[in-house]
Length: 118
Image (cartoon, rainbow, N blue to C red; front, side, top):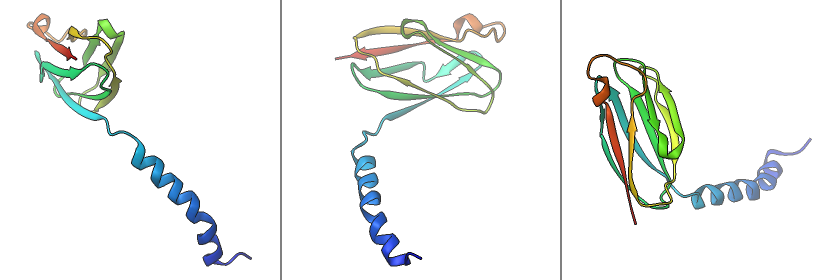
């Protein structure tokens, strides 16, 4: 039977390699967005071209949708259950997003903009 010390010595290189890989992994900026009748907060998000971010979307009061057509991105937002999506815009510009689940009078105003700069 292998001793505990020997197992630890054999596992040490693997643990060190795993730690090094985790340390080198770039941290992605997480942008939290709340969806509630009839707005997103924030509704303007500024990003840098080539920056990979995580959008964490949470519906507060209703089942909303999040649609970002220019990036072929669409998700359903169930109340109280955060949804995470990764976004890496490569080009500059202004890109609109909107709620695509009808949430009542005022729904057509539920929109925002992602501004991508160099």
